[in-house]
Length: 198
Image 1 (tube, helix red, strand yellow):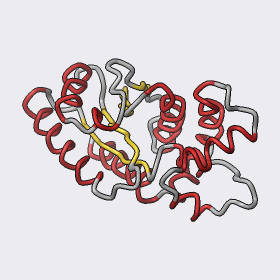
Image 2 (tube, one colour; image 1 turned 180 degrees about the vertical axis):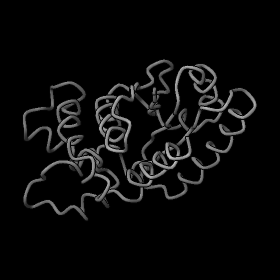
Image 3 (cartoon, rainbow, N blue to C red; image 1 turned 30 degrees about the horizontal axis):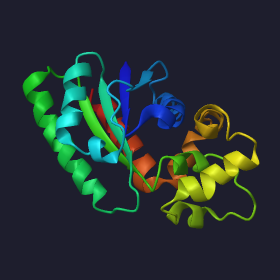
């Protein structure tokens, strides 16, 4: 089974998304799933990632090559982002129904508040950091993730520490599900439902 993850910008996000989704899929009964992060086209930011026509290009291009496509963007403190993603999902579902045979699903996820929070949820954090405070921070990348990567000497590594920290965090995917129920676990439950259905 092949799964395509579509980030708003793959350049750094790929180092988080590939290991997290590989481990997540293994944990829900798909250990041989092949996870690929979409690098072509490069969306280059949230504005492009929220354009249904751009996502439709990706669905048309890869829809016959994968089983599931997941658009994965940051929430960025915008509660209305989920509604926009729901609309994109509906548009892509209609497109899939008219263009592809059964066997392709499209989901969209908004990481609260940035996907770096998922990595932090899977790590042992410094003793003076409270998860509830980290989780509520809109600028979690700058305020917490980058600080942690710097303190560990990983700022110059691939993706500013994302590759190493993403792989470490992925080992605790069930902890990430518990700490991030509104986004990561919600997406995991939706994936489980897809696989139960088929």
